[in-house]
Length: 446
Ligand code: BGC
Image 1 (cartoon, rainbow, N blue to C red):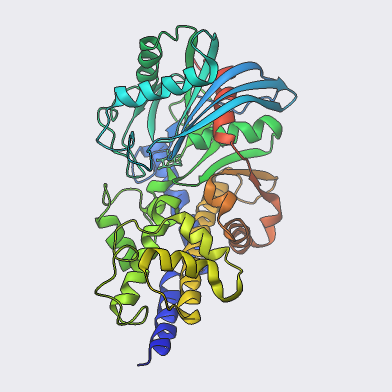
Image 2: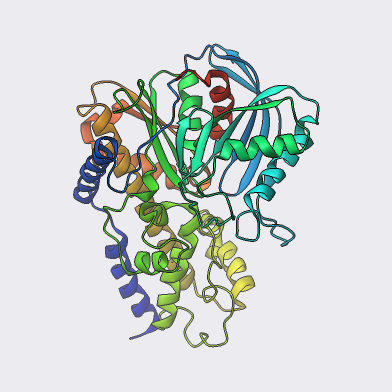
């Protein structure tokens, strides 16, 4: 078969492989809803349904709070003023990478311990507010934690390929407290810990009471919602679903290969199909397969280093670049590829095949996420009788070309004539601002 025929035939196969039909979305939504009930009532199944010990805010909370947002890529420290009336001002902020691309430090891997990591966080706080500030602190910690109170959160297990030593099984707030004391920051009181999805929902609900679902589509993926009747809990509260661990999904060979070679095989199956931490690697595996089949870059396989041969040589940013490339002859994609593969001659069909694959993967991600949102809505309001706002934060939703539009279209597909009741709302920096709101309301559940 000629190269271009081979490429077109393979793209058709891939289209089948990554397509999620409306029927499949509805089926996923049903299964997701059942898994939510299993997690809530029987503490079983893939969804942990973790209590947060936070309720929806009134919008009248006020004061100045320090927020530490420990995400998948950065730590963001901000001094935030809540003005009441649903208004929030960021007084100052600072963002630092958790892993230096130059290799001088890495707090995400087993190279570091929990003590070192939290001492690094304390250092970021000193850099922002100095050593003498007196202020309550809210921490957003974007990993699954067992909440025992609004200021006691035990890390269940790292996700997003993190592997820092001596943090799993420990109380995150205590680690932070000890690091603050160690640095002499006696005036900084860590009063609240939340998940980033909870922060996003708190921020949106501070402004609009119709917000009842919060979600992150970024390096990682997860969703929370406001549960009016949580079993075994003192009252209505936000529940962190940890939806990234959902596994009732149709996977293909690429998904299974990626999972098998990840830090934690069998875990975070949905997250590995939809989040920024994994989309690049998934696309690399698809491209590598086409290279092995001789449909892409033929005859140039053996002497190639870097992309697509090297693990993790493609990132979500590269996918963004390809999807956003409107240049003549896809010259921006070509320039990046030349740099990372050394290939001088790239044909237009090859370049547009890459864009097509990027589109298939990110569209599938949006449709899978939409199906899980439909599952949550089924729990909250099966007939969609009232309006709902789904607050979304994260780099994928904010920056990946086409992702937000595809998510909306997928919601319309799965919810059909009731879709107008549901608004998807970008809640930029919601995870961090939510930590300030959490600090303002902490301790409501005794
Ligand atoms: C974590 C969640 C988090 C999500 C988004 C996942 O890997 O398990 O707790 O909310 O990433 O950051």
